[in-house]
Image (cartoon, rainbow, N blue to C red; front, side):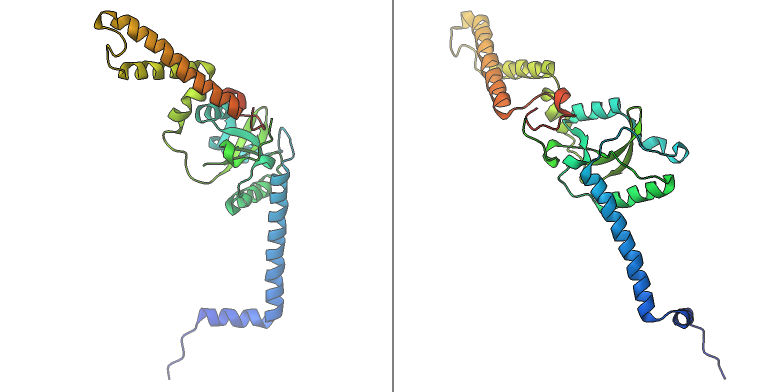
Length: 240
């Protein structure tokens, strides 16, 4: 007579139901899930509240050096790509579950409660006061920040080039000069004057193009309350 083979799942269920009823199991699981949800809500509330602090009690032996960034490095990226680096309370996007999970893991590893969260992202992702790739940071101290989580889509490879004219006033002037030069070159020679006065025509036309393009750009900038990247990267104001 052949003995039936042992089904481990069946044996496991027998052991489970010998010690715990279905109702008790469901209640225990529900309690565990509820405690997880409560902790996630506490973390999310801390991020939304955005309490300001300059440091957290990290255990430096457990930090990954590749995720530590100085404020100067953060500023460079914000200026190059026209991003903002602000308190998390101004962030209007949704914080993914992975970010909450990483915060909770860090808090457990370092036996602390993290505060003072910062987010690097384009202006459109912040709730800015009136005067495509977020990164969540927590301050370590001495102007160093720890990168907790990155989510969303990567920035366009052309964003840095597109934002170059708005980086500084000098960049803006170079852009206007170059644009005026290109526009002037597109006008056929002798269109306004005879061929004997081509140099004078080009110079006068260039001055006109420079004033025209610069005037439009400045008017648009002032009308929209825009400013250069170096001035807005840590500003909480829309028209800074």
